[in-house]
Length: 57
Image (tube, rainbow, N blue to C red; front, side, top):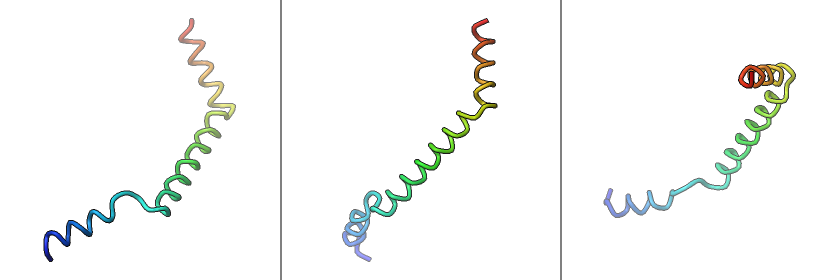
């Protein structure tokens, strides 16, 4: 294969297409939702409060 043709093909595939953006965005939103659920749970909130109380004396 000619080097110029190969470079032209590779340059045309730069970045993500719309479907990849959609999947990436969906994964980020799902992770954020899971993180929010964990951080707002009673056990995690009480553990964080205990750490803060211990740090403040």
